[in-house]
Length: 193
Length: 90
Image 1 (cartoon, each protein chain N blue to C red):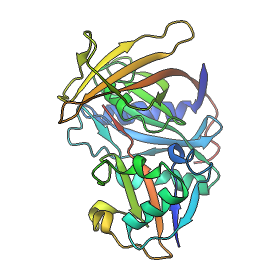
Image 2 (image 1 turned 90 degrees about the horizontal axis):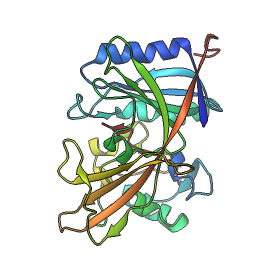
Image 3 (image 1 turned 45 degrees about the vertical axis):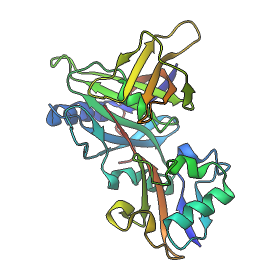
Image 4 (image 1 turned 180 degrees about the vertical axis):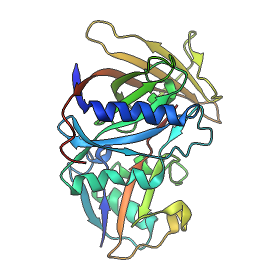
């Protein structure tokens, strides 16, 4: 399993950000090097319905290039799940455009015990399908998307199969693999902020 | 030629380059030039109808083009273009 090292201070700040933003989802970035986060940037959630979705504000999106000019990289993208578990939703998988970054999810489902977990999400190409499998289920709040989820099995990672139906009734299937990333807490202060 | 910042998910198409230089008088022209040099780029940025995909953001310097003239936004040779897929989910 891959690892992401973050400081205790950044870990606590993500939880504080999530709690301050609830019941809306919050989001932000971690910059660093080689799987080790050195700096945290809070973003604004500009999604139309921030209780159910997150979408990072445009100016924060541009920071990924500033990080590189400073010799860093965008090591992680974080967001909160105010009421659901610390695991990618089907919508998270659908919008997982950064396979090289770790997606950190902070769940407040148990208010007394926030939980944080990290994932890599790897999207395959969308493939046309002749029909829908019988056991697909609708994705929450979406009329154009159905899904099937399979837990990890031996060497095979967990995966979503996302089925989208176009206006002219064509069906495309996209597989998104979900790999867990272990979050390691460092007690050191961030050496660069 | 304008400088284009390429995000990590699209660097497979540019041979790993994070920044490329291409011609083009507007965003449509820049995307056509990118496609000519790095085949596959157009399909990652635009849909079949030639519209910018909903979850792709393109900036001229610090301004997202949806707040300018969209894909017809003019591009000057010393402009910096940034292509940025959304960070979004549920």
